Structures are given as C-alpha cells and as structure tokens.
Length: 230
Image (tube, rainbow, N blue to C red; front, side):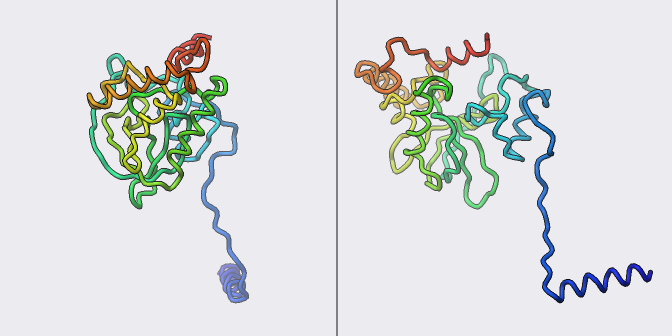
C-alpha cells in the first residue's frame, strides 16, 4: 500500500513538472517476414495492409505474395460483378494498372485494378517503370477521381474504369502505349469503351508508341506466365 502511494505521488509530481509520457502505437512484429511466413495469399495480403510491409509486394501491384494459394477460387478465376460509380481520392499508385484510393473520410484504402488493360510488369525492362510513372502523372496523389467499379477480382481488388476530369485513364494508358488491352477481361468495360480500347491499341502498335516500340514485345500476361514457370 505504501509503495503504491509513493508510486502515485511520483507520477503526480512528474506530471506536475511537465514530464512527457510517450505512448507507442503497435508496430509490426520484429521477426523477418516474407512470403514463406504465410500459408495463403489472403493472409499475406491482410498482413501487408495492416503493417505496410511492402517487401511482400515486390512488383508493386497491390497484391502480396501472388504465388501463394487462395482460400477461395471461383471457376476459371472468374471475377464477381459489382458495378458501382463513386468518387474517391487517390492515395498511391503502384504499377501501371494498380492504384489505391480512399472514399470520403474513410481511413481504409482499397486497391483498384484498372479494368480491361494490362500494364508491363515492373521487372519487364524499362517499360514497367515508364508505365508506372505515367500513371502517377495522370493520377496525382490527393486527386479526386470517379470509379466505375464493375467487379472484384480473385485477389480482392476492385476492377474499375477510372475517370479524372472527364478523361478516361484506362483508355489514355492504352493510347500512349503504356498498357495493352487485356482481351481476356475486356468484357469488364462497356461496349463503346471496348471498341475504343481496341482501336487505340491498334494505333499505338502501328505508331510503335511506348511498349510497342520493341521489336518483339512480350505481353505482360505472357511475362507473368514465364516467371511462374521458372
């Protein structure tokens, strides 16, 4: 009892004298964390989003440990329809087809995969980095954008068309040769947009713009497949 009283008096005196008491927020565990630390991709994703451990996402596409198995897989990796349109604020840009956004005052950010297009991977020569840098120019951090969300993919990302000041960003990336049309998932955009994307890609190929200036370009989806087979 006496020791407790002395402790309380000591604390009161310290506070009176203006001593600062620091309160530390929880941080990520100190042990080394890598993809081998998790059994499933969703577990790695949840850890990365909580602690910001970016080494779990080396290609900066917003997906942690892509090679890990998923808890749930839809047939043929199909995407689940959502279809909404709302305004969001850009938080960050990963590679050339992935961003993170927040809606209103909600502190929780969500990962957006640009619909109907596929950007070069970050390790795919200079073209991945160029694509990422161009998307950062088109979507500065803090900028307000409209999203036409059409689905949620198997990684939990929202798949969306992005509109900024009336400019269709997905289409702009294809026009500039900074991304290719993702024909496998082209149905995720409206019919008019599908036609515009296909035509824009043809022009970019003919003019050898951006990604298409290579003599033998490897499509991003093929590059990913080669990497998985190694």
